[in-house]
Amino acid sequence: MKLNIGVVGVGAIGQDHIRRFVQVLQNCQVVAMSDISTENLDKVNKSLNLNAKTYSDGHELIRSKDVNAVVITSWDPTHEEYALAAINEGKYVFCEKPLAVTAEGCKKIIDAEMKQGKRLLQVGFMRPFDTGYRALKQVITEGQIGRPLILHAAHRNVTNTYTDESIAITNTLIHELDVHRWLLDDDYVSAQVVFPNKSSLAPGELKDPQLVIFKTAKGTIINVEVFANCQYGYDIQCEVVGEKGIAKLPDPSQIVMRKEAKFYIDILVDWKDRFIAAYDVELQAFIDNVISGKFTQGASAWDAYAAAVAADTCIKAQKSGVVESIVMPKMPDFYKK
Ligand code: ISE
Image (cartoon, rainbow, N blue to C red; front, side, top):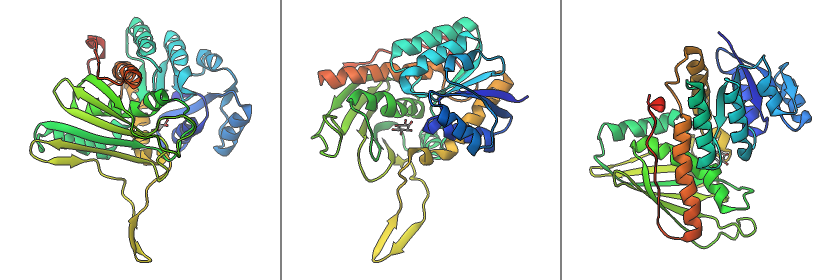
């Protein structure tokens, strides 16, 4: 079986995923694409030698009989409406993160999926497919460092156009909210946000960086530095301090250079390159999930909801400055793997 994919939104990540479907992944073809820019659509068709049908309206693509799986890579605030529309059509969906920008939005998608009576949707959290994060999880799960006590993490982007600190939560920190929960097999119980001096290189009034501190149900303390305009590179760090030792996420392997009296390793700048292999595995997993009829791999709408509940609380904590409780509802059996 070949999956007939329609892609909603052909911005940076949309184009990158289309390239994967066309050149890297098995058992799929891109039959349709939508975007507000017809110029972008034509460019993608041409550059990949594709002949996908183009739409200016994502909803029209979703209704098309030719499409059996919808891949949503549009602007974050539009994910919810497209995911809901696709599920209500009974179509399979791969939705980039965030599934919705609020927990309430994610909950609507959960209700719609449960109403269809079977899993239809996978969310684009790719880090659990990264070999580095997988190795780190294995070390923790095998008890090699003992009980995790503290997790230190950083999510740094070169620059960003965010104008509001809350977007650094829903668009950026959302990855850590998902991956740390998966890594520690735990849930969050509280969050606090602390702002150091604002970087003078961050645009306008944006308070950047920010430090987000969580406590988990099992008692681990997590701190994540979110720095949207760090200038020097795209840098993802994660270090788990356990009772018996420390385990650290490996940096991407790069050539080590000795040159002109310096010893150095390049740092990536484009976030799409940092997890390039993980994106491939994640999207092949989606195709395999659909073909096998069993969503055994990848993040579910419930995982996205759990991350969004924590994200909502972080945004509240940005404003209040105090420790805010996170109350996670119980996962329905429907989402148990
Ligand atoms: C971007 O949207 C992503 O998804 C990247 O993975 C993330 O690291 C980056 O901060 C986001 O802007």
